[in-house]
Figure 1 (spheres, helix red, strand yellow):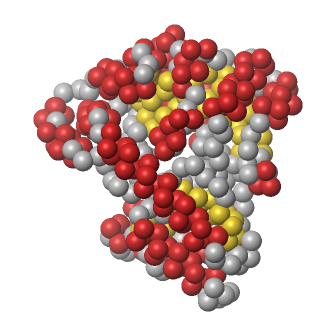
Figure 2 (cartoon, one colour):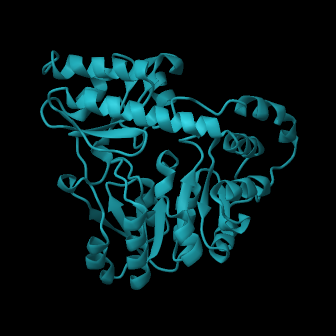
Figure 3 (cartoon, helix red, strand yellow):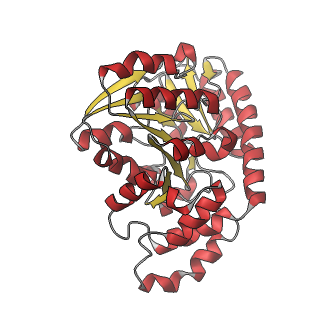
Length: 362
Protein backbone atom coordinates (compact mmCIF):
# COMPACT_ATOMS: atom_id res chain seq x y z
CA UNK A 1 0.00 0.00 0.00
CA UNK A 2 1.33 3.42 -0.98
CA UNK A 3 2.16 5.84 1.85
CA UNK A 4 0.56 9.28 1.30
CA UNK A 5 1.67 12.66 2.66
CA UNK A 6 -1.92 13.75 3.31
CA UNK A 7 -5.22 12.41 4.51
CA UNK A 8 -8.24 12.37 2.24
CA UNK A 9 -6.70 10.05 -0.37
CA UNK A 10 -9.94 8.15 -0.67
CA UNK A 11 -9.86 7.88 -4.48
CA UNK A 12 -6.28 6.59 -4.62
CA UNK A 13 -6.89 4.07 -1.83
CA UNK A 14 -10.11 2.91 -3.47
CA UNK A 15 -8.21 2.26 -6.70
CA UNK A 16 -5.57 0.24 -4.85
CA UNK A 17 -8.24 -1.83 -3.09
CA UNK A 18 -10.35 -2.21 -6.21
CA UNK A 19 -13.49 -0.87 -4.52
CA UNK A 20 -15.74 2.17 -5.11
CA UNK A 21 -14.77 5.23 -2.99
CA UNK A 22 -18.24 5.14 -1.43
CA UNK A 23 -17.33 1.89 0.36
CA UNK A 24 -14.62 3.65 2.38
CA UNK A 25 -15.24 5.46 5.66
CA UNK A 26 -12.67 8.24 5.66
CA UNK A 27 -11.36 9.30 9.08
CA UNK A 28 -8.11 10.53 7.50
CA UNK A 29 -9.57 13.84 6.25
CA UNK A 30 -11.07 16.24 8.78
CA UNK A 31 -14.25 17.33 7.00
CA UNK A 32 -17.55 18.38 8.59
CA UNK A 33 -19.67 15.18 8.79
CA UNK A 34 -22.83 17.18 8.10
CA UNK A 35 -21.69 17.61 4.52
CA UNK A 36 -22.14 20.84 2.53
CA UNK A 37 -24.60 23.52 3.58
CA UNK A 38 -28.14 22.75 2.38
CA UNK A 39 -28.65 24.70 -0.81
CA UNK A 40 -25.08 24.54 -2.08
CA UNK A 41 -25.85 21.74 -4.53
CA UNK A 42 -28.74 23.71 -6.00
CA UNK A 43 -26.72 26.92 -6.17
CA UNK A 44 -23.87 25.21 -8.01
CA UNK A 45 -26.25 23.45 -10.40
CA UNK A 46 -28.08 26.70 -11.04
CA UNK A 47 -24.83 28.46 -11.89
CA UNK A 48 -23.56 25.81 -14.29
CA UNK A 49 -24.40 27.84 -17.39
CA UNK A 50 -21.91 30.46 -16.18
CA UNK A 51 -19.14 27.95 -16.89
CA UNK A 52 -19.10 29.23 -20.49
CA UNK A 53 -17.53 32.44 -19.14
CA UNK A 54 -14.19 33.01 -17.44
CA UNK A 55 -14.59 33.33 -13.67
CA UNK A 56 -14.30 36.63 -11.84
CA UNK A 57 -10.56 36.57 -11.24
CA UNK A 58 -10.86 38.74 -8.13
CA UNK A 59 -13.80 36.73 -6.72
CA UNK A 60 -15.31 40.12 -5.91
CA UNK A 61 -18.69 38.97 -4.61
CA UNK A 62 -17.22 36.22 -2.46
CA UNK A 63 -14.53 38.52 -1.03
CA UNK A 64 -17.23 41.01 -0.06
CA UNK A 65 -19.34 38.26 1.54
CA UNK A 66 -16.35 36.94 3.48
CA UNK A 67 -15.52 40.45 4.69
CA UNK A 68 -19.09 40.87 5.93
CA UNK A 69 -18.98 37.41 7.52
CA UNK A 70 -15.90 38.41 9.55
CA UNK A 71 -16.82 42.05 10.18
CA UNK A 72 -13.97 43.34 8.02
CA UNK A 73 -13.53 45.33 4.81
CA UNK A 74 -13.38 43.63 1.38
CA UNK A 75 -9.87 45.01 0.81
CA UNK A 76 -8.64 42.79 3.67
CA UNK A 77 -9.65 39.53 1.87
CA UNK A 78 -7.74 37.59 -0.80
CA UNK A 79 -9.67 34.57 -2.15
CA UNK A 80 -7.65 31.66 -3.55
CA UNK A 81 -7.82 28.10 -4.84
CA UNK A 82 -7.63 26.65 -1.34
CA UNK A 83 -5.42 28.09 1.39
CA UNK A 84 -2.62 25.89 0.00
CA UNK A 85 -2.34 28.20 -3.00
CA UNK A 86 -1.65 31.04 -0.58
CA UNK A 87 0.88 28.98 1.38
CA UNK A 88 2.93 28.67 -1.81
CA UNK A 89 2.56 32.37 -2.69
CA UNK A 90 3.64 33.76 0.67
CA UNK A 91 7.39 32.95 0.34
CA UNK A 92 7.26 34.91 -2.93
CA UNK A 93 5.62 37.85 -1.16
CA UNK A 94 7.97 38.15 1.82
CA UNK A 95 11.50 39.46 1.51
CA UNK A 96 13.94 37.00 3.03
CA UNK A 97 15.33 33.53 2.69
CA UNK A 98 15.05 31.89 6.12
CA UNK A 99 11.80 30.44 7.45
CA UNK A 100 10.79 28.82 10.74
CA UNK A 101 7.97 26.25 10.92
CA UNK A 102 6.31 25.26 14.18
CA UNK A 103 6.14 21.46 14.35
CA UNK A 104 4.34 19.11 14.12
CA UNK A 105 3.17 21.01 11.02
CA UNK A 106 1.08 20.72 7.90
CA UNK A 107 3.69 19.48 5.42
CA UNK A 108 3.05 22.15 2.78
CA UNK A 109 4.58 24.91 4.94
CA UNK A 110 8.08 23.52 4.60
CA UNK A 111 7.55 22.45 0.99
CA UNK A 112 6.48 25.95 -0.04
CA UNK A 113 9.57 27.50 1.52
CA UNK A 114 11.88 24.95 -0.06
CA UNK A 115 10.32 25.40 -3.48
CA UNK A 116 10.97 29.15 -3.22
CA UNK A 117 14.62 28.52 -2.34
CA UNK A 118 14.36 29.33 1.35
CA UNK A 119 16.24 27.67 4.19
CA UNK A 120 13.74 25.90 6.48
CA UNK A 121 14.19 25.30 10.20
CA UNK A 122 11.72 23.79 12.66
CA UNK A 123 10.65 24.57 16.19
CA UNK A 124 9.68 21.15 17.54
CA UNK A 125 7.03 21.26 20.27
CA UNK A 126 7.17 18.38 22.77
CA UNK A 127 4.20 16.10 23.37
CA UNK A 128 4.80 16.38 27.11
CA UNK A 129 3.77 20.06 26.92
CA UNK A 130 0.70 19.29 24.82
CA UNK A 131 2.39 20.68 21.69
CA UNK A 132 1.85 24.25 22.96
CA UNK A 133 3.78 27.17 21.50
CA UNK A 134 4.70 30.15 23.69
CA UNK A 135 6.03 33.61 22.96
CA UNK A 136 8.96 32.79 25.25
CA UNK A 137 10.01 29.93 22.95
CA UNK A 138 9.96 32.29 19.99
CA UNK A 139 11.95 34.92 21.88
CA UNK A 140 14.70 32.31 22.11
CA UNK A 141 14.58 31.27 18.43
CA UNK A 142 13.69 34.36 16.40
CA UNK A 143 16.87 36.35 17.23
CA UNK A 144 18.70 33.81 15.04
CA UNK A 145 17.24 35.71 12.10
CA UNK A 146 14.02 34.31 10.66
CA UNK A 147 12.08 36.23 8.02
CA UNK A 148 8.84 34.20 8.15
CA UNK A 149 7.08 31.98 10.68
CA UNK A 150 4.38 29.41 9.89
CA UNK A 151 2.13 28.33 12.77
CA UNK A 152 -1.23 26.53 12.72
CA UNK A 153 -3.96 27.37 15.22
CA UNK A 154 -5.60 25.00 15.98
CA UNK A 155 -2.54 22.93 15.19
CA UNK A 156 -2.75 20.28 12.52
CA UNK A 157 -2.37 17.40 13.33
CA UNK A 158 -2.29 18.10 17.07
CA UNK A 159 -5.60 19.93 17.50
CA UNK A 160 -3.97 22.19 20.11
CA UNK A 161 -5.64 25.60 20.37
CA UNK A 162 -3.86 28.72 21.55
CA UNK A 163 -6.09 31.47 22.94
CA UNK A 164 -6.41 34.91 21.39
CA UNK A 165 -4.26 36.29 24.20
CA UNK A 166 -1.54 33.70 23.57
CA UNK A 167 -1.58 34.36 19.83
CA UNK A 168 -1.51 38.13 20.41
CA UNK A 169 1.67 37.67 22.45
CA UNK A 170 3.16 35.57 19.64
CA UNK A 171 2.25 38.22 17.07
CA UNK A 172 3.88 40.91 19.19
CA UNK A 173 7.00 38.76 19.54
CA UNK A 174 7.21 38.40 15.76
CA UNK A 175 6.83 42.17 15.32
CA UNK A 176 9.70 42.82 17.74
CA UNK A 177 11.97 40.50 15.80
CA UNK A 178 10.87 41.59 12.33
CA UNK A 179 9.45 38.16 11.44
CA UNK A 180 6.46 37.92 9.09
CA UNK A 181 3.78 35.83 10.82
CA UNK A 182 1.54 33.36 8.96
CA UNK A 183 -1.23 31.95 11.15
CA UNK A 184 -3.09 29.07 9.51
CA UNK A 185 -6.61 29.09 10.95
CA UNK A 186 -7.98 26.47 8.54
CA UNK A 187 -9.99 24.85 11.35
CA UNK A 188 -10.81 27.99 13.37
CA UNK A 189 -14.48 27.93 12.28
CA UNK A 190 -15.01 25.31 15.00
CA UNK A 191 -13.78 27.76 17.68
CA UNK A 192 -14.20 31.15 15.98
CA UNK A 193 -14.04 33.18 19.17
CA UNK A 194 -10.26 32.57 19.41
CA UNK A 195 -9.38 33.93 15.95
CA UNK A 196 -6.87 36.78 15.76
CA UNK A 197 -7.99 37.85 12.27
CA UNK A 198 -8.81 41.39 13.39
CA UNK A 199 -5.49 41.81 15.15
CA UNK A 200 -3.36 41.12 12.08
CA UNK A 201 -5.65 43.16 9.84
CA UNK A 202 -5.31 46.14 12.17
CA UNK A 203 -1.64 45.92 13.12
CA UNK A 204 -0.12 44.21 10.07
CA UNK A 205 3.01 42.10 10.23
CA UNK A 206 1.42 38.97 8.83
CA UNK A 207 -1.66 37.22 7.48
CA UNK A 208 -4.31 34.80 8.70
CA UNK A 209 -5.12 31.92 6.36
CA UNK A 210 -8.61 30.45 6.35
CA UNK A 211 -10.33 27.60 4.54
CA UNK A 212 -13.88 27.14 3.31
CA UNK A 213 -13.40 23.44 2.65
CA UNK A 214 -13.15 21.86 6.12
CA UNK A 215 -16.01 23.41 8.07
CA UNK A 216 -18.24 23.80 5.01
CA UNK A 217 -17.34 20.34 3.62
CA UNK A 218 -16.40 21.25 0.04
CA UNK A 219 -12.72 20.20 -0.24
CA UNK A 220 -13.18 19.02 -3.81
CA UNK A 221 -13.96 22.59 -4.89
CA UNK A 222 -10.73 24.09 -3.44
CA UNK A 223 -11.54 27.38 -1.75
CA UNK A 224 -9.60 29.38 0.83
CA UNK A 225 -8.62 32.96 1.62
CA UNK A 226 -6.20 35.22 3.43
CA UNK A 227 -7.01 38.07 5.81
CA UNK A 228 -4.60 40.94 6.35
CA UNK A 229 -3.91 44.63 6.03
CA UNK A 230 -5.22 46.04 2.70
CA UNK A 231 -1.83 46.97 1.21
CA UNK A 232 -0.45 43.53 2.00
CA UNK A 233 -3.52 41.77 0.62
CA UNK A 234 -3.27 43.76 -2.61
CA UNK A 235 0.32 42.58 -3.09
CA UNK A 236 -0.64 38.98 -2.32
CA UNK A 237 -3.57 39.08 -4.74
CA UNK A 238 -1.26 40.33 -7.49
CA UNK A 239 0.79 37.11 -7.18
CA UNK A 240 -2.15 34.79 -7.91
CA UNK A 241 -2.48 33.11 -11.25
CA UNK A 242 -5.44 34.58 -13.18
CA UNK A 243 -8.77 32.74 -12.79
CA UNK A 244 -7.41 30.37 -10.13
CA UNK A 245 -10.80 30.20 -8.36
CA UNK A 246 -13.43 28.75 -10.64
CA UNK A 247 -16.97 30.09 -10.92
CA UNK A 248 -18.70 27.12 -9.30
CA UNK A 249 -16.37 27.24 -6.29
CA UNK A 250 -17.17 30.93 -5.85
CA UNK A 251 -20.91 30.22 -6.01
CA UNK A 252 -20.54 27.39 -3.48
CA UNK A 253 -18.66 29.69 -1.14
CA UNK A 254 -21.36 32.34 -1.33
CA UNK A 255 -24.08 29.78 -0.69
CA UNK A 256 -22.18 28.37 2.29
CA UNK A 257 -21.87 31.58 4.27
CA UNK A 258 -25.50 32.49 4.84
CA UNK A 259 -26.76 29.57 6.93
CA UNK A 260 -26.33 30.42 10.62
CA UNK A 261 -28.26 27.32 11.71
CA UNK A 262 -25.80 25.07 9.85
CA UNK A 263 -22.91 26.74 11.70
CA UNK A 264 -24.64 26.26 15.04
CA UNK A 265 -25.46 22.60 14.36
CA UNK A 266 -21.93 21.91 13.10
CA UNK A 267 -20.23 23.34 16.18
CA UNK A 268 -22.62 21.55 18.55
CA UNK A 269 -22.20 18.23 16.75
CA UNK A 270 -18.40 18.39 16.68
CA UNK A 271 -18.10 19.52 20.31
CA UNK A 272 -20.31 16.68 21.52
CA UNK A 273 -18.84 13.97 19.31
CA UNK A 274 -15.27 15.04 19.96
CA UNK A 275 -15.88 14.68 23.70
CA UNK A 276 -17.51 11.26 23.20
CA UNK A 277 -14.84 9.97 20.83
CA UNK A 278 -11.94 11.18 23.00
CA UNK A 279 -13.43 9.42 26.04
CA UNK A 280 -14.08 6.22 24.07
CA UNK A 281 -10.54 6.15 22.69
CA UNK A 282 -9.03 6.89 26.11
CA UNK A 283 -10.92 3.89 27.49
CA UNK A 284 -9.11 1.55 25.09
CA UNK A 285 -5.88 0.12 26.54
CA UNK A 286 -2.81 1.46 24.79
CA UNK A 287 -4.34 4.66 23.34
CA UNK A 288 -3.94 8.26 24.53
CA UNK A 289 -5.93 10.94 22.68
CA UNK A 290 -4.71 14.52 23.05
CA UNK A 291 -7.04 17.43 23.90
CA UNK A 292 -8.25 19.16 20.74
CA UNK A 293 -10.41 22.10 19.69
CA UNK A 294 -11.17 21.17 16.08
CA UNK A 295 -12.86 18.25 14.31
CA UNK A 296 -10.03 15.73 14.70
CA UNK A 297 -8.05 14.00 17.42
CA UNK A 298 -4.36 13.13 17.59
CA UNK A 299 -3.94 9.74 19.26
CA UNK A 300 -0.74 8.31 20.70
CA UNK A 301 -0.21 4.56 20.80
CA UNK A 302 1.46 3.96 24.17
CA UNK A 303 1.23 0.17 23.84
CA UNK A 304 0.34 -1.89 20.82
CA UNK A 305 1.08 -2.13 17.10
CA UNK A 306 2.53 0.89 15.24
CA UNK A 307 0.24 3.31 13.44
CA UNK A 308 1.00 1.91 9.99
CA UNK A 309 -0.16 -1.53 11.16
CA UNK A 310 -3.28 -0.05 12.75
CA UNK A 311 -4.02 1.77 9.49
CA UNK A 312 -3.46 -1.41 7.48
CA UNK A 313 -5.81 -3.46 9.63
CA UNK A 314 -8.52 -0.79 9.59
CA UNK A 315 -8.41 -0.83 5.80
CA UNK A 316 -9.74 -4.36 6.11
CA UNK A 317 -12.76 -2.76 7.78
CA UNK A 318 -12.89 -0.21 4.91
CA UNK A 319 -11.80 2.64 7.21
CA UNK A 320 -9.02 5.17 6.61
CA UNK A 321 -7.08 6.90 9.38
CA UNK A 322 -4.07 9.21 9.15
CA UNK A 323 -0.77 7.56 10.06
CA UNK A 324 1.23 10.50 11.44
CA UNK A 325 4.72 9.06 10.94
CA UNK A 326 5.31 11.47 8.05
CA UNK A 327 4.71 14.54 10.23
CA UNK A 328 7.84 16.28 11.45
CA UNK A 329 8.04 15.82 15.24
CA UNK A 330 5.85 12.68 15.32
CA UNK A 331 6.50 9.01 14.55
CA UNK A 332 4.60 5.78 14.01
CA UNK A 333 3.23 5.87 17.55
CA UNK A 334 0.74 8.55 16.46
CA UNK A 335 -2.33 8.62 14.26
CA UNK A 336 -5.06 11.19 13.63
CA UNK A 337 -8.78 10.58 13.22
CA UNK A 338 -11.55 12.91 12.12
CA UNK A 339 -14.57 13.43 14.35
CA UNK A 340 -17.59 12.15 12.44
CA UNK A 341 -21.18 11.32 13.43
CA UNK A 342 -22.01 8.95 16.29
CA UNK A 343 -22.68 5.86 14.18
CA UNK A 344 -19.40 6.27 12.30
CA UNK A 345 -17.44 7.08 15.45
CA UNK A 346 -18.85 3.95 17.10
CA UNK A 347 -17.71 1.86 14.13
CA UNK A 348 -14.19 3.26 14.48
CA UNK A 349 -14.04 2.62 18.23
CA UNK A 350 -15.34 -0.92 17.77
CA UNK A 351 -12.70 -1.65 15.12
CA UNK A 352 -9.92 -0.19 17.27
CA UNK A 353 -11.22 -2.13 20.24
CA UNK A 354 -10.73 -5.31 18.27
CA UNK A 355 -7.07 -4.37 17.82
CA UNK A 356 -6.20 -3.00 21.23
CA UNK A 357 -8.34 -5.28 23.39
CA UNK A 358 -8.68 -8.55 21.55
CA UNK A 359 -6.49 -8.23 18.45
CA UNK A 360 -2.99 -8.47 19.84
CA UNK A 361 0.02 -8.71 17.50
CA UNK A 362 -0.59 -10.52 14.24
